Amino acid sequence: MYVLEKAPAKINLSLDVLYKRADNFHEIEMVMTTVDLADRLEITEINENRIKIESENRFVPNDERNLAYRAAKLLKDSYGIRRGVNIKIEKLIPVAAGLAGGSSDAAATLRGLNRLWSLGLSTRELAKLGAKIGSDVSFCVHNTTAIARGRGEVITELPAPPACWVVLAKPTMGVSTKSVYQQLNLDSIAHPDTEGMVRSVMLGDYDGMCNRLGNVLEDVTLPSYPEVQQIKTQMSLSGADAVLMSGSGPTVFSLVKQESRADRIYNSLRGFCDEVYVVRMLGYHQSLD
Ligand code: ATP
Image 1 (cartoon, rainbow, N blue to C red):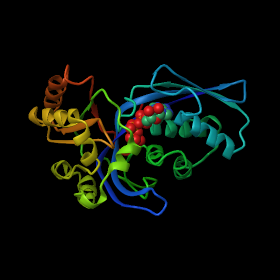
Image 2 (cartoon, rainbow, N blue to C red; image 1 turned 180 degrees about the horizontal axis):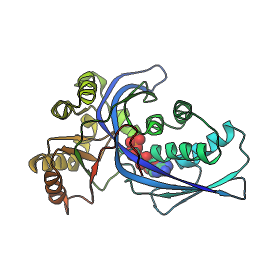
Image 3 (cartoon, rainbow, N blue to C red; image 1 turned 90 degrees about the vertical axis):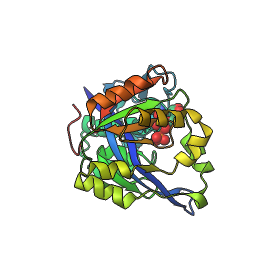
């Protein structure tokens, strides 16, 4: 018996940090959506009572450090499952890119095992478990457009954003999310208009969404990595309607209404940037298959 699950990448349409909490986590507010660039997971039952991870990407750990492993272990321990699985991850999302690839693999594992082991858990129950693995996992379990609050685990679903093309570009280096949060100066933040972004998404207002893209983590990543600013500038010059860094970076994305402009941006970045993708946002409860 086996199940297949897609684990899509996420982008932040807005990312705000409100304050640092007593438990040392940051209180954040993010509007996030998923795009059709996805890892593919094949989860197969095996005869031994253990969790095996298979991945050919050298940046992805094949042991208990893998977030998919941690998700399977958590579900197994929480529900007393005495069966084993092999989780094969075909990694298509760039690693340490600000696209929540690892969190999405963990979420896909929770969804997949919920089916394979017939646990009958709701999305909310899976998202609650996911929060124990990482702040972005709850959002990834929902697999839709949403506003995330708290440390990222308090999810309110939103309708699909207005349709457009998304060009993603990832420079060679990876960025550590933890170190970016550590360097953030909370006194000098220009907060994005999160409420306005939510309103724009709900109204299907494309221009409003473009005008309100904002990510406070750019304050840390842009000065440290000039390549990120160069990509932003190149995308704007090539006709992007709006440009933003996703998460803690270094991936930058641009939004465009017209496919021909998306192609122009894509072509202008080839040779300048290793990994460039033209993708679409995924809609609310829209099938990924
Ligand atoms: P986020 O946007 O949530 O901060 P990210 O996209 O910046 O995430 P990931 O691709 O999730 O970063 O990877 C961060 C680190 O997590 C990697 O360096 C890798 O060692 C580790 N990791 C553990 N499991 C996975 C996985 N399944 N896929 C990718 N990386 C993983």
